Amino acid sequence: MAKVLIAGGAGFIGSHTCLVLLEAGHQLVVFDNFSTGSPESLRRVQELTGTAGSDRLRVVEGDIRRPLDLSKAFATGWGRFDAVIHFAGLKAVAQSVHEPLLYWDVNVGGSQHLLAAMAEHGCHTLVFSSSATVYGLPERIPIPETAAVLPINPYGHTKAAVERMLADLAASDGRQAPEGGEPRSGGWRIARLRYFNPVGAHSSGRIGEDPQGPPDNLFPYVSQVALGRRPRLQVFGGDWPTPDGTGIRDYIHVMDLAEGHLATLEALWNEPPQLLTLNLGSGRGYSVLEVVRAFERASDRMVPFDLVARRAGDAAHSVADSSEALRRLGWWARRDLSQMCADGWAWQQRHPQGYRSAG
Ligand code: NAD
Ligand code: UD1
Image: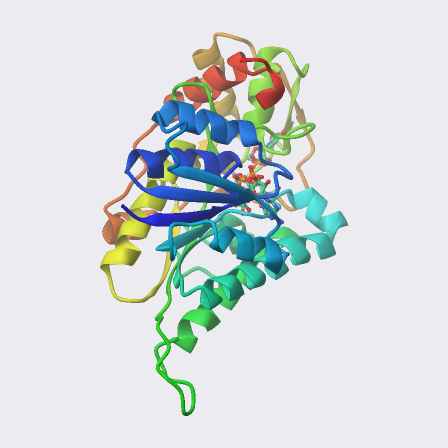
């Protein structure tokens, strides 16, 4: 049993990862400022895992930009943490274009403070949420981890900057003794996980994605149209160089992604200190129209749509070469598109207004 600090654990991917880690027997402290995440998601994670009242999941409200808040989190464990998983951050591309300083402050400045707190408290194992967005407009499909990191928006720049910070930290190798001093413990074990398009929900329909306001991303938008909460989907571009003219993406079930975090932790703990960089995707691409049809089948509802102009900054294709994760972790995405739609629909139907819905 390990002790893990989950920064941003109340959000979409974080809550599903907490569930998987609790089921694997670990003890967790979630550190979150609840800016986009919800304490209700954690209450439900405890209920689903039968850990309510067991003290296996503690919650500390705070901001990764505030060293005092971080000190509180590091003092809340059961002694030294065995790892940190860092989900905390902002992820809306369009907002990042309008408020780049906010994104650099939270995503880059916040990460720097979190890393400093880890070093101070003797925790040198980190899993970081990066994104396929670091590849920008990819040169070839599927995209291997060795592809150029050339982001095309401020959000992507902040993810690439943290990736760079982590590479510098890994290269600094804390095992060297400072001049005249004792050798420091350490030897960083760091994973930079580049997620493709996480979607779906836990099969119970009790936890899921809860965007504030109109969703930016395809899946939550489609599910809100199926529900009747929004009248029609706008399909951004029907003239891409793809078989049906709509954009192709690599959708990955959030539970597969969560299990990928557990597999990553186990690899970091069992192997010598390293910097691991992995794509987490399914390796399969689906077009917007294929997603719409799959969602219609899963929900037995219509998803009316209009073909409109391309969205600025979109690429035609984004599909992971996911062979490295299989080789390094023995992990692959097992759940298919119909399950992503069925589980996403179960969550959406039971929670038309997300966590604000009753029940
Ligand atoms: P989310 O918004 O649901 O979760 C982020 C969590 O971080 C929330 O609980 C939020 O309250 C918390 N948070 C934000 N700022 C904070 C701060 N300053 N201090 C403390 N907590 C803070 O998003 P998600 O989809 O779960 O994404 C998690 C991570 O994965 C993010 O770093 C995101 O950039 C990355 N990512 C997400 C996707 C995706 O499509 N969902 C794709 C690639 C990468
Ligand atoms: C977007 C972000 C990416 C981020 C990811 C997080 C942009 C340009 N990219 O990726 O940086 O890491 O979200 O999940 O915002 N689509 C529609 N109608 C919609 C919404 C989307 O047709 O209302 C299309 C898009 O053009 C795209 C596909 O659906 O072809 C998927 O879009 P989306 O879910 O926003 O994901 P990405 O664009 O891959």
